[in-house]
Amino acid sequence: MSDALAASRLLPADILRVGASGLRSRRLRAALSALGVAIGIASMVAVLGVSESSKADLLAALDRLGTNLLEVSPGQTFTGDAAELPESAPGMVRHMQTVEQASAIKALSATVRRTDRIDEAETGGITVTAADTDLDRTLGATLLEHIERLREERGVTILLVEHDMDVVMRYSDMVVVMGEGRVLTTGRPEEVRADPRVIEAYLGAEAVEEASADG
Image (cartoon, helix red, strand yellow):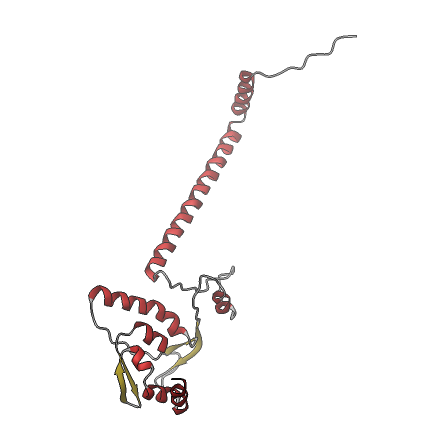
């Protein structure tokens, strides 16, 4: 019986020679493989570059909008058609912990026209947009902060016509209350809020009696 053959082992130099011979014998295949690797790396670099560019554009857009106002609009479907946000979208946004207020608007198919004597094909009319009733409060949070900063930085007096009492109490130094075309009272916010004439005009005489009884 003959002895078992010893296991052979390729040295590093042998591995390099075998690999080099394969590249030399299949030059086109080796070139295509190298090209594929180069294209893959270039694609990854391009994707990362687009992501960074999109991130920079998003941050710039946020800076233009302000620190506390974001606008969400629908994009397109996979078929390229205009997408629509579901009716539950505003409610879902309001449930986010970092969102203070949210309102929605929607462009309607109806239009407003000055006269019915002009053919509809000749003019599109005025576009009608429906909005939530609290839209002014949602937008006012940003607008009033800008107004307050403008007043502090430039020392100017700003006349603000507002019916939201919370806004009036928070941002006003002096309040003028009007009812039925005449001035009811003038004073500081806390004084105006307790004025019986203001309470009666906006809440009724019964509210004045209740306020007097509580006082």
